[in-house]
Image (cartoon, rainbow, N blue to C red; front, side, top):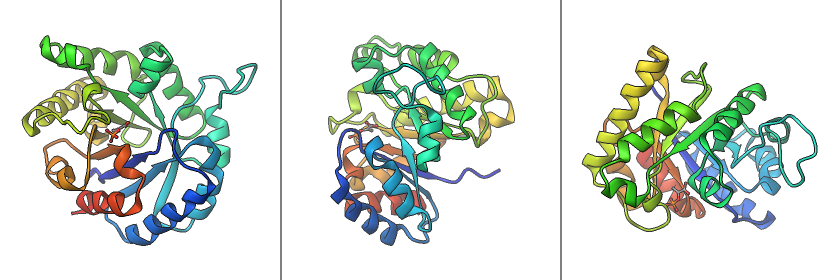
Length: 248
Ligand code: PEP
């Protein structure tokens, strides 16, 4: 199965109802794109965005979910709620969740299983800190995150992995192309070892300061199947250029 490239936008805690104009522009610009296009807006906008994107070429996702179906978890959202609002994907284990909310691999693992229970595709995020990279431990850290965050039963259609070095997120800095290709090759080998051919079918995204100027060269690297994009996904003009790079 050929891996279709994925351009995924993570809006984080940005966007109000008026932001639907950016979605409209993206739907127009991305129409007919070869790459799959995903926007993960704040949860308050998922239902409206999903309704608007329904017949366009853009799919909508959540940024996080709770592992339980329902219950006494004030402020949390279940994967079922995201699916009910129209989401098709959910990001789990983003480094901002790991850092700001103390999420560990076991929770990320449970959230990925919750995503599948609700029929969503899980985008599992992994990535080393700068100190870990400087200590020569990047592969060890990412290997452990993959091993303990990704559940058994992952396939090319229910799981996407996003490699996001923590030090590259929102900083304007990126690893060298060689370092990105090296890490993606390492992750591919780990996933094939564990999941067999399913590991070949999973899309591996690079995330961390992707922008129109660097997207094409990063997406052309071996085992890079698209990007998870924060800041540059907020403006339709920038993100459309990234979608074009993923489609090229
Ligand atoms: C992210 O948070 O997933 C991300 C990649 O952010 P940015 O593109 O802004 O570095």
